Length: 102
Image (cartoon, rainbow, N blue to C red; front, side, top):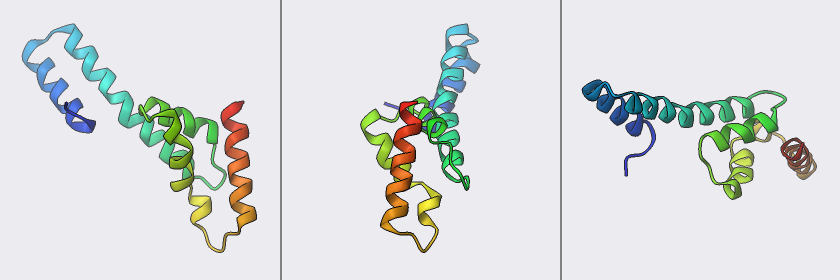
């Protein structure tokens, strides 16, 4: 199975050869995954991340629901700033849970 940007490249080449509308739509659909990943990452790089938007971006990027909270914590730049405390980590987790459930 072709994954990531390779899938988009493959679908674009398929459309270029066939000029079939279904192949064009498959190419456009393949763009939603990297765009969702980018949205999620950019939101987590903000000083005050929008966790709901980040969660939606990861879903658009076809990340499994069970993996999203861990990815949000791992990529959260607020937590990468030092010094951070256990209290700060717990505050971020609480904000993530409230935003995602809203």
